[in-house]
Length: 182
Ligand code: ADP
Image 1: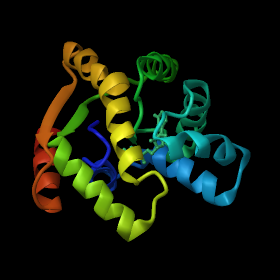
Image 2: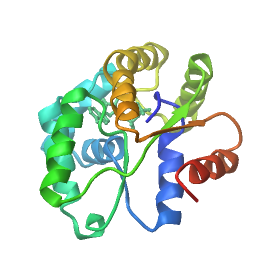
Image 3: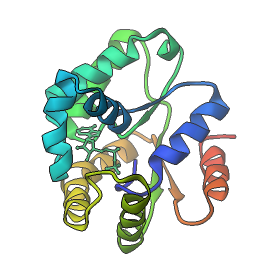
């Protein structure tokens, strides 16, 4: 977990690689669907471009389907999901059905102005249509309103570990792996 621009995607793929499990990024799946022009992509694009969350029903079904793929049978790292309390409930149900449970929730902590600067740089590099300044600020607001409250939920469950997301990528990875237990 962490606000947009915290570096979740970068760290998720490195950490998942080290752990030998798939990184499942809802943002990546939505972007791929948009590129391919699938019905899911068409539906998701309007929300993403406005900095809003894609509706829970759409996101939840997509994650449940992705978790059914064979590579996720024995473990996975979720990046960008859950992001709402309804998604937390849904994920709890999916995992209970599978006889699984979350082992850890990792939060990358970063300064808000730093992430805005990062995202605007990324906009120049990658041309993401949800990286304009207004949309970036809206995504941060949505994170604060809808996703930040999940941190307390996972803290109460004893699952939350927090890692400073500022600094060189490999140092953040080292901190994260240490926080996850080696
Ligand atoms: P960031 O973390 O920088 O916001 P992501 O790639 O994780 O970027 O997500 C991009 C967009 O995809 C979000 O702004 C949102 O519209 C949509 N999205 C991703 N994950 C979810 C989710 N779990 N629930 C709803 N919408 C999501």
